[in-house]
Length: 291
Length: 291
Image 1 (cartoon, rainbow over the protein chains, first blue to last red):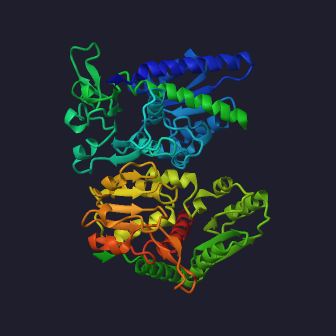
Image 2 (tube, helix red, strand yellow):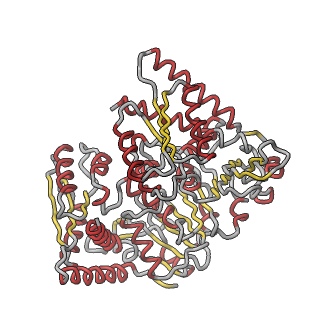
Image 3 (cartoon, each protein chain N blue to C red):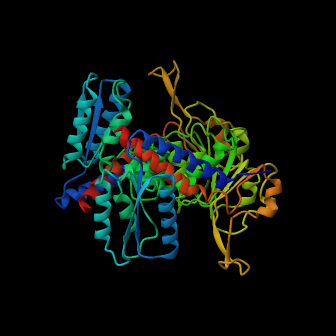
């Protein structure tokens, strides 16, 4: 059994980007610039956005944090997005979700210029992904593909079972794993699936994106399977300083002895998301340059 | 075994649209207007486009056929598309494929206003479909969904196996069948899939979109399966006036006795495509009205 070390891979990627940015600077080129829009003061959102901005600084990107008040109108947010769309200095930007309830999230995501949509949530980018055109792949699925690639996990002709059909993980993973060049046979399962165990037991690769702690048990997987755990759930734990621990969808103690490769939680898929957001911003810069 | 009679269903849909258009006329409203762009004089393309235009006339739509010469430049075609995008009289339009080799098909499809893209081939519409937003679903997948609906074929919790991952049939079918409200567990198979028979034998619903005559044999399906045959291949046949017959992916003689429902070829999925193109044009009209 080998651990798919997302933390290590994400550090490698950030290191590669850091070198690339240093080379850009040395050539006198403009470095990538990521902006993040945060509406309101939700604690978790502040933490996420702060972490993204700090990562930009660390690797040499320019970054802008746009903080807007909880009471911001949809109109004002849309005006800000228009400004960011039109600002040539900004290569890519994200709007941190969730947004306050009085704002139509879908309308906001649709207002982002697809060429700056480094989160890859715009339908235009999602459609391009499905049609195998150049696009921005959402950070979590992109991160999983990168882990599989860097560990040389064989995907062609393998049976991949994805658990969960969310728009940000399950659905894109089912599409990416069956694309040309990856070539898995993919089964997408969800809450209405009958006899899930019969399906997961046949899988060469299992990707769980449920948010249900310790859901995947040893009897549900076959010997030698590759296990990708996208679940991140906070479970109360008084022995921890923060009063909780992070738990995945996979019962790691039970499943890991049967697996050929497995992502831990934490330290697996999670750390990849910021690295891939940075990677998308670097791509955005290159594409704007190419225009 | 019950035949899924696409010919009958398509006639019903056209009848419903005819009545709706008559009612629109009676209310003094503008009727839907479909335009079709044909570049060159390929025989099959001429037949398809001609059939679409005649169907429009028959059900009371306005229609415009834009014929352009084989030597048309990409620039001239793009200018024509811009004109159609901006023409308020046109609700939807299609560009008949394939295009001459000197024209970049992808560039042309991307130039079509997604709100008029009644073929549903634009990445924006494909992405909206995948994200379960209001869109235009490509005619063939839309037609299959309509057949399943009108015959009350149970899809929820069923295992659907799609054979073929093309952008116009296999991929969209795999997405649509696993969407909320349809709720199939979906396996998407393709040329790299190993032991296809083991997979199709477990399927409650098999959708083949290969273009490989008589590919699906009785031993590949389980008793009581629903069989949707999207294959349309011309096979030389000197006993026919045209010198060929149309053959599906399914060995109908062998498979039909085991099936609970099955689409014939011809007369199954094929006739649905024009009906769903007309349905999309009606939808386009309604959406433009609503703006």
